[in-house]
Image 1 (spheres, rainbow, N blue to C red):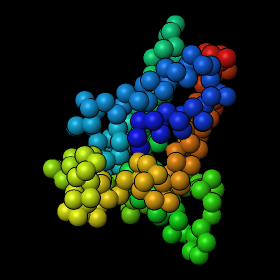
Image 2 (image 1 turned 180 degrees about the vertical axis):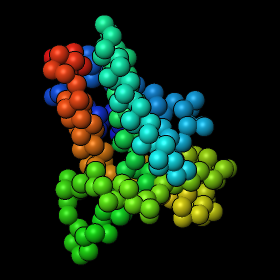
Image 3 (image 1 turned 90 degrees about the horizontal axis):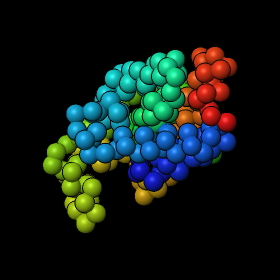
Length: 207
């Protein structure tokens, strides 16, 4: 998703759960995942190019880094790891066909976006789950506003350009991806609450 949307979602999910100081560091780390240096050679950061298993593994690794950081005197590294984790978890819904598969279960009038289940195991583990592939140079041209329509005429249906739900311009499915991403961010926070000791959790929330 676009960087401002990542920030907006993270604030919505966590502003009442961590201190303002913690939130700003988490958001800064979340935003940094979209730096140019993280766009090339790191498909797992964004669930691009069908890096589904690697993306899930990356989230687990960052969760482990949060735990390890909280065993040390400081807390900054824990917030940074959680920021990276949230970005990748949020991109799962914008860069894969999860939303489409979830909606396919509800023929007729679909449920409202806030009703989406972001962690339906049968979908997350489905062999049909896939993400957009990056096709150069057409996918690069997609990000140039005046060339976007041209690039879309040449891109395959499984391309990032045609599959992404990165902004409201991508149509009504974006709202489902956004709702799922917010709920997943809260879900990841709740996982920490379960696996951390009360002392470590209090340190992380900084409240």
